[in-house]
Length: 236
Image 1: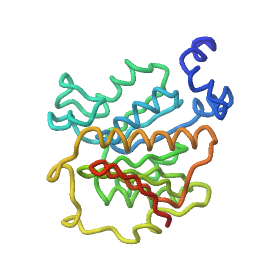
Image 2 (image 1 turned 180 degrees about the vertical axis):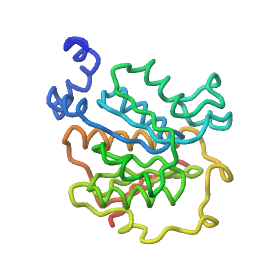
Image 3 (image 1 turned 45 degrees about the horizontal axis):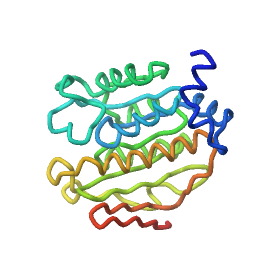
């Protein structure tokens, strides 16, 4: 893309004193991996692509289903039963075709996690199960990569940044994973659509701040209760 078009596209970010041309160049040179193309992954992908992250990879092995559409806003009725990575690629091509987008259609497992995560600067946890969440944390700690974590349930969400510039990680907050039967999930308990939009947007903001070299709060868990409209930060 020509420099004048780059400036025009991203001018409202460049005009921010703390970002400027230097920060925008850092954003455009960043490589981000998103794990999960669902409720959280959708807004994260939208805002990172809109901001001009240079390379975005998306890991998912699922297909678009009708019940996804109340919250997974990158997908549409036209893409029912299409892989979520293909649907996401279609979205990227329409919204910002300059992005180097890498769809990765697979299930993240212990035997492939290192290879998948290694090429990227920042990892974003948008998954929906604790097995993958703990695997991501373990791999990021081993590879010394920052991990942006988010989770949602009903009206409530959580957000944290792990393993960034020597900060604490998931095991410092939750040393052991709960058993699967103890964990509520959207399939059984539901989620109101805007909640992942709120949490996902907050996650994208943390990614962009890291990419631009801006300060990021670490060793803190942000709790969002949209039913009572309460926002709480807990240090750990």
